[in-house]
Amino acid sequence: MTALSSHVLDEIKELPAKFPQPRSAVMPALDLAQEELGYLTPEAMTEVAAALELDPGYVEGVATFYSLFHLTPVGKHRFYVCTNLSCMLRGANEIVDHVKKAIGTGTPEEVSADGLFSYEEVECLGACEYAPMMRLDQRYQYDLTAEKIDALITERKEGKVLPRDGEVAAHRPEAAPVQAKKPRAPRKKKPDA
Amino acid sequence: MPELRGSYGDQAQHLLTRWFGTPDLHTIDVYESKGGYKALGKALFDMQPADITGEVKTSGLRGRGGAGFATGTKWGFINRDAPGPKYVVVNADESEPGTAKDRYILENSPHMVVEGILIAAYAVGANQAWVYIRGEYDGPHRMLIEAIEEARAKGYIGPRPMGKEFPLDIRLYRGHGAYICGEETALLESLEGKRAQPRSRPPFPAVKGAWGRPTLLNNIETLATVPWIINNGGAAYAKLGTAKNPGTRLLTVSGNVRKPGVYEVAIGATFRHIIIDVAGGPPEGRKVKVFWPGGSSAPVLPESMLDTPSDAESLAAAKSMGGSGGVIVMDDSHCVVEAAHRLLQFYAKESCGKCTPCRVGQDWAVRTYERILANEGSHVELDILQRVSDGLQNGRCLCGLGDSGGWVIDSTLRHFRSEYEDHTLRHECNVGTVKVSA
Ligand SMILES: Cc1cc2nc3c(=O)[nH]c(=O)nc-3n(C[C@H](O)[C@H](O)[C@H](O)COP(=O)(O)O)c2cc1C
Ligand code: SF4
Ligand code: FES
Image (cartoon, rainbow over all chains, first blue to last red; front, side):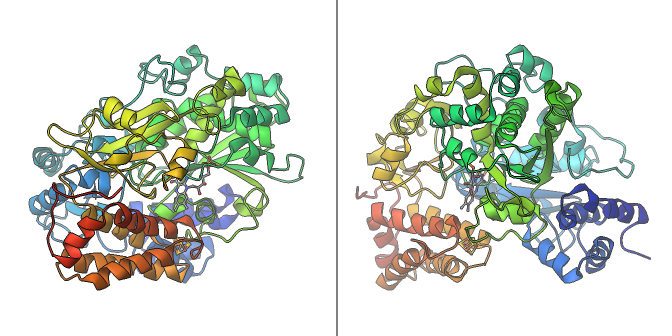
């Protein structure tokens, strides 16, 4: 049994040809692996390395450098709460406290008992005019309050929002109706336009 | 779309944001109906590449990514006739704390960015552009993909754009969460599939950039300005702003103001105008205490310097800089030492670790702030902060991230010495009653 399914490995093997030099494929490849497994296990990184004909140590060196790659399990829905200055000045630390209490975890490494939630404090997400804000399920959430957090959690507990909804939504993810979608078939993901 | 917070509509200083807020401006039909892609046609058919670069030089446009380098001069560094591939790499990594303007542009008018990229690529003789966009920008990423597809379908992108024998293509590459990727050579490393650690220069990207090839690197806002300049002429652009720092900028005003937003202003407007008149000033009953005029990396200025004009020269005279255009405002209910601590945590976390003064120095600073805020400080801690700050600045580090941490310490100490002394010597926080040394 491999960690990654064969169609994902096939997709990964097609990536290097899309760049002027094959090494550029390493991050798009890790994206595909993380999309399938939720986080990057040593086995998955080894398989990515083999598929790209790279040294596994090199692949792990890249994976550990970038904060959007996870090396430990994460919740199905992860709260990336911005606590940099502009958000901090508008109450971001209180928002983090509320999130932790509401999902019942104390550190970014923990996952809620039902497997649904985890959180992380992140640096400026480039939407400071809507502070305090966060990223959740490929979508930005603005002007956060404790009530808003509770509503977002309830929606997800009731299964009304799937983790990749924001990405599927059309032009303006914020305007897309929040509703349940069928899980998607394995997607032909291109690393580029 | 949430409520638009920032500039839109027909005002004299709205060169980029004039059509923002128009329904469906992000679609190619609406963009064309506002005159979109006329500049590309003009550049491809009525101008020589050297004239395009010349027009940008005349405009006096300076890079909006942070360093403020003259854009036309940078374009001129690329040898258009050198054989082999050349690239335009677009910096959409926007992660300087307090900065949201590239996102604002991409969400409102992705075609303006696409058009600017195509003109730049033609001017420097590059057939291929890559946009490096931060991984968290899911919405802007999707909108750019769709804009590029629309432009391809309409024949603006492709083997013969608008019929011109000069292939043009744009592809996207997503970042994965690392502030340092905004630094141009770290960005190139990342694009090549490596850990994002800055390169030493020379060679400069214009000679040896992406995949070892000559590369033009520009910020999203810089390139979004290009269609206006081509349509209206560099001289018209230079009429706005100041003589040495012409044009308009999109300033992100955030923090303790009543109307945070991304505002397009003529460069040179004072921060009093920007913070008080445009962004509504601090909340009821509060006073501005301090502001960062150009992102968290720009040295702070106290309230007494609100009348500083926003052009590069005036800011340099005030010992700060225009940086990324992120104006972070803090009112008198917040503590400067705590704010500085938070920013040093940021620089320590984001240091790529390549050079020792930055890797070690930022951590030293964080630990020193922790002791101070735990009321364990003394004059020793004040000394340490000053010395760590000196060790981070003035070319001791390979890239600007090192200096940035140093500037936060240095500028907050310079203007708010008494607040630091309250914390370190007297173990008290006197927020609200703190005296400011100009
Ligand atoms: C630590 C650091 C972070 C940076 N982050 C960004 C960024 O997020 N976006 C950006 O456009 N430029 C950033 N820059 C500036 C770039 O290195 C580069 O100067 C700029 O992208 C060039 O484009 P321009 O001439 O159009 O401004 C950063 C620089 C440093 C030192
Ligand atoms: S100054 Fe810091 S971020 Fe920049 S290269 Fe050196 S260690 Fe890396
Ligand atoms: S500081 Fe939170 S989005 Fe910029």
